[in-house]
Image (cartoon, each protein chain N blue to C red):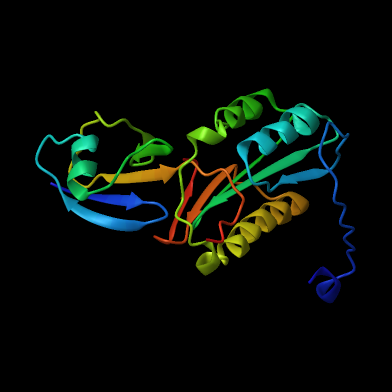
Length: 73
Length: 140
């Protein structure tokens, strides 16, 4: 099944997930690190790595941003 | 810019925030969650003289703006759920010199909310705009 992953601050990924895949499995398969400091949504609703995906879902990976500050390095 | 387009005057004051009595529209555009929480708890939360609070945050190319009445218990509860410790924030890539334009984007989102308030138009309480993916989300 096809899902779209919006990795905010990075890129958009159209990903072919296996049937019954969870959000965590799809992110891992797409090479998206859902590390600390990220909020997850499926079709704008809060989700966890264990949430199952459905055909056509839009996953949004939202960084928790605090700034702010410019890092000039 | 204001001088060129209107009659409004701006007086910049550089001073630490430590519980001053703020009034009017308050816009928070600071560098850390610790500073943001200090302003919120010390000067804005349930202050009747502040009818509108705008909290602007950015990180790399992601901009986020919260807009609400800080005397409304429901809105206060919702906003406080968005506060977190600095250690929980995402570590953004250090390429800010190349993406300084994001400051203009977040400024535009803030100015839009002020304009809506001034004109009595509906406010948008939670706007998320990402320049990297050109995504605009509301209410997430």
